[in-house]
Structure formats: structure tokens, C-alpha cells
Image (cartoon, rainbow, N blue to C red; front, side):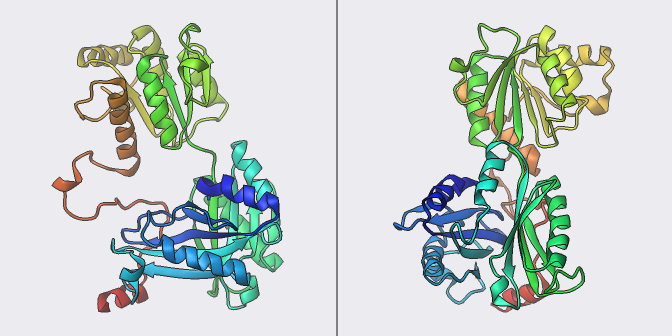
Length: 390
């Protein structure tokens, strides 16, 4: 929902009603992940996407209808449907999309969600998407680490979903949870989609050089909250890095150590060391390679890389810590310009995050999307049987 939050909130503030379609569950090669959303405004304007264009027309019609009726519904699109080619989802994937009207009446705590996301505070939205009693559909809880707002229909259901949603929020995962009709742990009948809105992952770019400006732009494009840091005030200025969220003048290793001490880094953090100057990058990498972050890359020639490794070993780093280092930074794209180099760095970050090999897809067989442990459901036996007969 974050990709359409501004448009949704603008409609909400006027007192109008928007139609919202949200991907809540995917199977196989679905084009969008759970949480992807599309908003239909009162004037018919569309924001966002639930399938990259495949089923937008069908979801648009559904969104228009639920605004008129006030009744939300859960819909499935995929190749097993008789009208799969009519709606255009020909990639072999299956999408479950919850379509609902959103207004100040149906979502009174939307402003709380907007504020939390804007201030980089974690928050989750739990919405009932299936229930034997239709009046439960669309009820929701807004859940933060220390409080809740709203309600699903019973104290028991609220307590169970709150506990589970906080676990998902801590892991940064969004998924559908199943309970008995009153929130029973062992049972079926109620399905709740928990959309976790964790703070944006961070990208720390060290070295205020021309390559850093291009890397900051790529990081922002990928959804990172980007910080550029350099000890030289004459180079580290906001004017030189307009796409960065912040520009910090400080010795890199001191800044990184302070951020780690403050708990401002996590397993999604990407660290790009572009200084290729031993007095900056060796102390910095001594700190970075001892952290549990998602990516640490350092720029420099192979000679610089070999010298850097020798210095890091002298500083006491072991082979396990050194193996975390991506150096020379980036994938082999034959890049020349800062912009091309930034693309190669961004590509390596994405590949490491999802387990990609960096090879052309045309040279590979099998699935395009890698399996991951984000909690996405596997095909149930019933659905697998249905597809095999299709």
C-alpha cells in the first residue's frame, strides 16, 4: 500500500471514498508481491498496480463496484480460471486480491498509518479478508510495537492477530494468517491479511564523489533511505546529492559505529564504500564487516582490493568476515560512466538480496523468480490438483 499511500490519503482527507485493490497472496510466477496495491479515485483516476498491467482492468471494475455497494470482496485471478486470458494473467501465476472501499468511515485510522510511515516507525495493518460472517469482512486492526487501534470483531481475535502481526512486523513480512471464526489458533474460517510497513531499508554511501551521486540515485529508486557520508565538508553537501535523504559530514567509521550503536542498522542495510582511500575505507570496513547487514561493497582496482584485504587482516579481521565483502564492487556489466557503474552496484545488491546469479535470464532455464523465505504460501494440495486438471 505504501506505493499508493499518498493518493489514498488525499482522497481520504476529502471525505470521499476510494476503491482499493491489494495483492494479499500469490502463487507461482505472480508479477507483484503481497502488499502491492491499486487505488481507483472517485473521478476514475488510477494509481498503482497489482499485476504490472495483467488484470488491472478487472480490478478497476471490481473497485468501482465495491465503492458503490460498500461490500468488500476477495478475488482470485490466474491461469486456472476460465477467464484467465480474458483478464490477461498469462504469466502462469495466481493472485488473490482483496478489493474494498476506503473512506474515513471504513478506515478511521489511516492517518495513523500515514504518520508512522512518514516518520520511519514500524506499523502493521491487519484486515479480515475472509470470514463466514460477511459483516467481519474489511474490519481491521492498526498495530504498532506498543499499541493498537481499531478492532476485528472480538477481543479474542484482536489478541491473537496482534501477537502474530507484531512478529511479522519485526521480520518485515506481509502475509495471510488463518484462524477460527473467533480468532481460535486451531481452526479455519477467518483469514487476515497483515501488511507490515517496516521503515525503508537504509543505504549508506561513503565517499562524496561523482559515483556516490549516481549510487544514491539508484538506491533511492530501489526504495532505500539513502545517507551519503564524507569527512570533507566541501564535498559532502546536499546540493551535490539531491536524491539522498541526508548528507552527513563525519569520519565514515565514526558515523557507522554510532549508527550501529544506536540500533539504526539491520539485516537489510546496504553499505557502499566508494572512497578507495585506505585512511577512510580500512577503518570503515573494520566496523562494517563485523555488522549483520545485507551488503558491504567497496570500490577500487584489484590492486587496491588486495592491499585493502592485507590491511584488514592486519587489523584482525578473519576470513569469515572478509568473505562478506563485495570488492571490487558491482557486477561485470562493462560499465564506464558513474551512472552505469551505479547500475552494476544496484544489480549486485539486488542479486545478493534474492540469491540471483547475475547471469542473463536468456541463458538460464526454470523459474524466473527465485524462491525465498518471505512466508509466501506454497500451492495447497487442492489448488495443485485443480491446476493439474486445467
